[in-house]
Amino acid sequence: MSKIAPQIIPLELGDKSYDVVVAYDLREHLHEHLASLNKGQKWVVLTQQVIYDLYRDVIDELTTNGFDLSVIIVPGDEGAKNISFAEQVWTQMVELGCDRSSVLLALGGGVVGDLGGFVAATYMRGIPFVQIPTTLLAMIDSAIGGKTAVNLSAGKNLVGAIYQPKAVLIDPGFLATLPRRNVISSLGEAIKYGFIRDASIFDTIENNFEEMVSLENESLLSEIISKSCRIKCNIVSNDQFETGERKLLNFGHTIGHAFETIQEYGGLYHGEAVLYGMKCACFISHKKGLLSSKELDRSLALLNRFPLPELGAVPPDRILEIVAHDKKNVNGKLSFILIDSIGNGVINTEVSADDILESLSAIN
Ligand SMILES: NC(=O)c1ccc[n+]([C@@H]2O[C@H](COP(=O)([O-])OP(=O)(O)OC[C@H]3O[C@@H](n4cnc5c(N)ncnc54)[C@H](O)[C@@H]3O)[C@@H](O)[C@H]2O)c1
Ligand SMILES: [Zn+2]
Image (cartoon, rainbow, N blue to C red; front, side, top):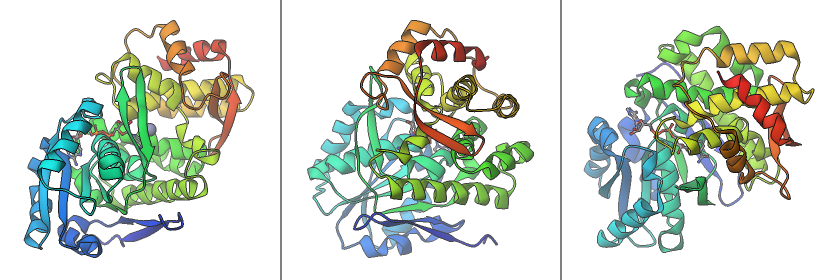
């Protein structure tokens, strides 16, 4: 039993409000957290083989406690966020007898959460779903806020819906089996919160880099998870449909998505692409006169400590082409999220193609 007290972080969204619960032993009595949703209907756990093999006991705990539950497995990589897998899951759910009252549990990282949320949003025009994130990225970011999506070959997350879960149940204990590369990738999103909203997150990662990467320190990890969740809940509650403040969460993502798309979703993890993208966004923030040289140096120094895979060829024309399709662009003008200091993001800054191309010098 962990000494760290459980936290309940409310996400206020009127009749779509829900709680984000962070507790170390949560997965040992999941049925208690889900009891209020269980009316004897059919439940589906959407997950991946590696997670199923590691955490079958979590699923068994629900079955033992009276849940009528089936498991659907999708591939273990970003390729699962694809409309053809959504169709396979819809079809399996029909075969399993799922109806409008059925509940979908997304047990996994951002891929399972995004696909599961999309399937839940669309199956019979929407069924309840619950996020049980198993990666750090999903715990601090993707499981919260209702963004669901699948990818197209033309770009990431181009088809989806904003559809809120009924609850987000976070047990940091799942992270014990997470490969180091995924931890590093996930910390990219944590640093993002440091850049756009809370410099103390940046400071904590800067001052405890090795401990953070090895996830050895439970209290530091809890601090980062709960601070990140609180920021995400606060921003989503203020701007669920991303007309303003929520755009801040895209810091580092515009060019990051372009890197991911170029690599056809196979070569780079999402958070790695965002770490690269934040180097470019910091560079542009400085070039536009927003971020001081001192803070640019400090930002790049921390970002450069993360071991990242080689990017390979980055064709400038292709980057510009992908950035031009970004959902954040306004009236055909390239619009970026930048920072004017570590801890304060700025939305809707117009940038030029030259700004973007020059910023690529920051990625080596
Ligand atoms: N919806 C949003 O708001 C949002 C925000 C950020 C990112 N995303 C999306 O999230 C996705 C990336 O998510 P991710 O970084 O969680 O990666 P992921 O879901 O691909 O998981 C990484 C790998 O780790 C495995 N895994 C998961 N949990 C594990 C555990 N506890 N132990 C061992 N292995 C485990 C998975 O099977 C997978 O192979 C991207 O598709 C990105 O677009 C969505
Ligand atoms: Zn992201």
